[in-house]
Figure 1 (tube, rainbow, N blue to C red):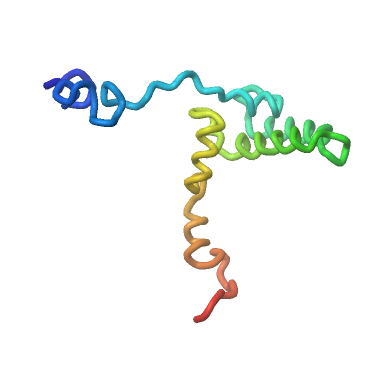
Figure 2 (figure 1 turned 90 degrees about the vertical axis):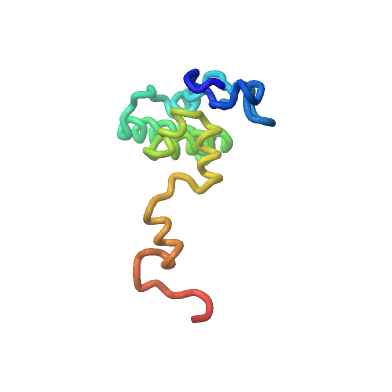
Length: 135
């Protein structure tokens, strides 16, 4: 048995990993993650501050807005990029795992906080809200 090699202790016994798992017992190796698309769309560097991101987005959004003759799909992509880069948690997810990580995080309800939990439990969290359904 291999207890000091850094892998799963039963790798040698199990023939290189858990049955049905990945060889070596670890996670699959992924290539480099593309986490530059959103920064390029907004027109900022990866180390841009939130204020720089906001300023660049507004400038580009004015030019690309569909009401100003811009392409609606490109505007939608720009807005999606801004929504990710302007949110601390989503930006961190994006920097680590790219677009896929953000989409998976949203599917799991990621990016929420205590306010969201209280909102779900107490119907808005603001107090004084109207109750729904039978009492």
